[in-house]
Structure formats: structure tokens, C-alpha cells
Image (tube, rainbow, N blue to C red; front, side):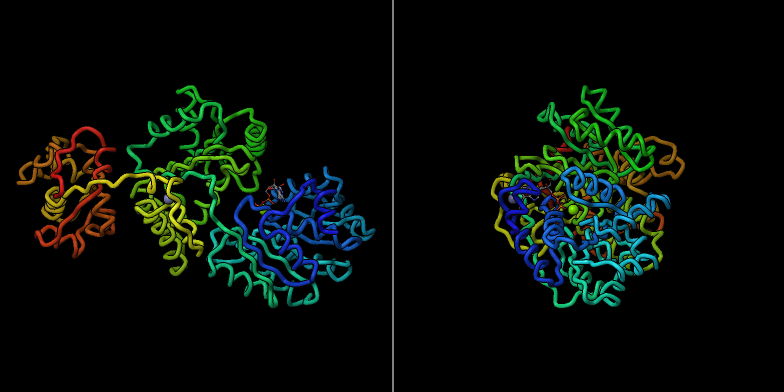
Length: 518
Ligand code: ADP
Ligand code: MG
Ligand code: ZN
């Protein structure tokens, strides 16, 4: 029966991992939590049983109107009776949906969380014959997820007031903390819990320190992908426009996309991308949720995503067709600082620290020498052997280490001698003997450290500063100024050594006058 529906209604001849198990839990009237990565095929897990329970209604709660619209349209095109209740509908349209519901004309009803929490919806549940309720993108119930929605958290009323209706929750967010929170928040009763593998063996994962604004690196990367589709993520809306322009000037077809664009333009841009009329979308993270385009060959991040969950979801948009695809993450310590500062506006102290830690976790991932696939799947509590050839770290030959203790001490000494009151740019100006007014006004040209580092390029100094942050020799003061930690003080006194990968300095280009570590 189930197999027949799969073939006849959906046109697939086999299940993907855990689809069958999920479907069986639902048809056995059990509560369910299924964790499958983006693109794993979660929709089928509930759309198929919705048809299995003929004559009954399946309710799907989904967080985004755009997602709801897409799914209802796709189902309708497939000849499946589906409709929706969202804030977009006027009262006449709502009445029409109600009419269909009372006439038992629908197999699936999609509902936004806001609607689900309205009293009218409870009334509806009391009157209809509901087979099961789906909570899609269920991580939205959890404050520990990355897309918390207060309206989702209130959905516990479903189980409390309608304990006889099974609930099936789906998400791609896989930490056990979030999973436990979902079960608890929705009051699931002895749920079947299923979790798929997060290893994407067709994705090549590359991570690099960003030099400057990273655009040269981006253009070089894209040379390998002429005429291929891909997404470039930037942090700000302004950057989407600038990077798209830059790519256009280099002969690439690219369009910008962000939440500030008019709806119509957003839809048009997304549509062009899906239909291969434009190859590259340069976007903020507003782009991508629910986009089901199979031939995305690359995803580039121009700076650090806000968490491992976001990173995984964004790279997950590449290679849904199973063909080899490449992901490039360009990052810098300044991304962490920039994003942490934005988080200072979060009032809840606990949540603020949690969000800051998420970014730092991702920075540690970016900076690490461990297999990327091992690190990513490890984050989702899955253990994997090293990928051998699918990530930059596994492809890298052993890299020589450089002893940069001398340079680190020059830098720390300059910070110390200027009272730990200045930012990176000024400190590097002093080291390189700049004659700019800020240096002269502060009489920093009279310091003994003035100009002692003019052999070393500005970019290399930036990377040394990054390294000192990484090893926690430096921290930021209240006004973003560079401040020595206890460990930094030890380095300055010559009590601790500092070394760095040689390739870090190669990337910085030109002047590398550092001593090789023996
Ligand atoms: P998710 O919600 O898990 O991110 P979707 O439900 O949007 O994923 O499914 C992703 C894609 O996989 C869709 O294009 C869907 O048609 C396809 N798909 C789902 N199940 C199967 C299957 N058993 N065989 C082939 N393709 C499938
Ligand atoms: Mg989905
Ligand atoms: Zn690897």
C-alpha cells in the first residue's frame, strides 16, 4: 500500500534513508521526531501517510508562508488535495478553505504557527477528523535552535488539548539538546526518534582565511565554475549588491538578493535562479529556505555563518542532485568580533552568551586542522572517519610551522607601551613606522618600537593579530582596543612561544620575513 502510493502519487521507486521508518511510525499512530538533513526528503515522510489515511485530514504547521505556498502548489499540481490557512488569506478565501474542510475535500491543510495559536483553530480541530499533526522545521520550538519562534513554543497546547492526535515533528537540526527540547516542548508521548546521517559525501568542504574583502579569492574560485549555478552568502545587504556588481564586472552573471528588496523582485530573482536564467545569487541568509534546486554546484560564504547549524543548512543547498559540489568558507577573526557586537543588543544574558559561543564554535571549526566532514558530523553527534579527500584539511600536506614568537613580542610590546588603548590598525601603523597624524599626534613615533616591524606586510601583521586572538594572548577591551591577557603577558616576557602554519603567511603574500621553526 505504502509502496504503491510512493510510486503512483509521488513517482519515486524507492525510499531515501529513514523515510519508510518515519512513515511506519505515523501509520502506527505513534508520536515521531525525525531528524534528517536538508534535502533528505522530510516532506514525503508526512505527505505520503496523509494520503494513506484516506478521508481524514493531515495538518501541517510550517513556519514560513513562502514554504507553505510552494508546498501547497506542488501538491496541487500533483493532483493531491491540499490547501492552507495563513495570514495572507482574506476572509472570503478563509471561508472557502473552511467549506472544503467541512466537506472533507482536503487531504492536507498547511497552517502557519500564528494561525494555529488562534482560538478558531482549536474549534476547527474539535470538529474535524484529523489523522495526525505535523510540525515541520520543529527546531523553531527551541531556544537552543537557531531560528526560535515564540509561536512555535506555544504549540504544546496541541498535545495537551488533543492527546489522541499523534504528532510528527521534523527538523534538520540535530544536536541532542535541541531534539530533547522539541520532545519536551511539544509534550510528545514516547515518540519514535529517528536520526539520519549528516555526512554529505558529494560535498567538498574548503575553508580559508579571508584576505582583504575576499573578492579576488572569490573570482578565482568561480573560474572553475563557469556556467554553473551557485550561491554566494554575504553578511550584509549592502555587500550582496556590491559583490554582485563586482562579479558582473568580472563577467559573471550574478544577482543580489536580500530581505530588503521588494517582494516582487525577490520572487523574480529566486525564480530566475531556479530556472537557470541567472547563474549566481549573492545573498544574505534570507535566501534559500525551502529552495529546492538540484544543480547548485557551489556555495561560498564570504564570512563566518552565525552557527554550525546555519553553516550546515547553507552548504546543504549545494549538490542536492548527489553530484560533486564545492563549498568555500572565507573567514576572519573580525567576523566573530562584528557579529558578537551585534549580539550585545540581546537582553537575555544567557541567550546572548549562547549565541556568541555559537559563532566562536564556528571560528574554531574554521581555524581547525581536523577533517571538515569529521568536524561537521561530529558537531551533530555522529562519528565519522576522516574523509581523506573531500576537504581541504585532508588534502593538505603537512604544513611547516613558523616560529613567530619574535613578531608576537614586537606586537604585544607595542600594545603594552601604548597603554592598551588602541585598535589593530593603529598598532600596526606604529610597528610599520607610519607617519599618519594619529601616530604623530600621540607622539608614538618616539617609541622604541616605532618602525621595528616595517619588514612585515600589513596583511601579515593582521594575521599575527588573528593568531594571537586565537591562542588567547589578546582580547578586546571595552572599546574594542587590543588588550593583553595573562598568557599574552607571558609571551611578552619571553616565557611562552608562538608558532603558526607557514601557509597562513604565504596567503598573506609578499613580505614574509619570519624565522622558520626548527
Ligand atoms: P527536506 O524537507 O528534508 O529538506 P524535501 O522534502 O524538500 O527535503 O525533499 C528534497 C527533494 O528530495 C525533493 O525534490 C523531493 O522531491 C526529493 N525526494 C524526496 N523523497 C524522495 C525519494 N524517495 N526519491 C527521490 N527523490 C525524493
Ligand atoms: Mg523541508
Ligand atoms: Zn576531510
